[in-house]
Image (cartoon, rainbow, N blue to C red):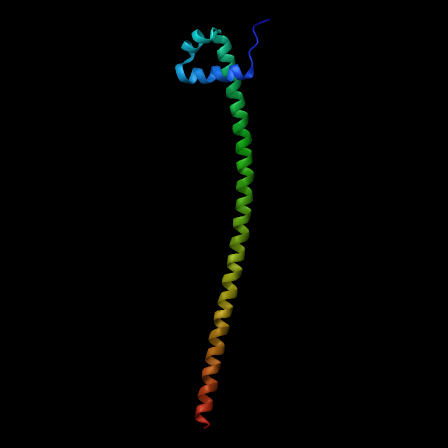
Length: 108
């Protein structure tokens, strides 16, 4: 059976690969290139899994935001209709008041 390395050691080894390259890291760490490649492969798989989880989370968050936007757009449309109604009502009552005042002036 081969030598066992801690997760922390493997993590630091992968950082070293990023900093100085795989060939130099193999020399410095005194591990085989195959071992380092296996660590890189596993780290890549973990990264893919993390990215898949993040993507699923982002899709769910996006769906929630789209639903919220849809609700807000409907509410906005309803409020616009209410405003139009209130503006029409205000014009109607203003015109009614003006007619009432005009008829009072002619009866005096």
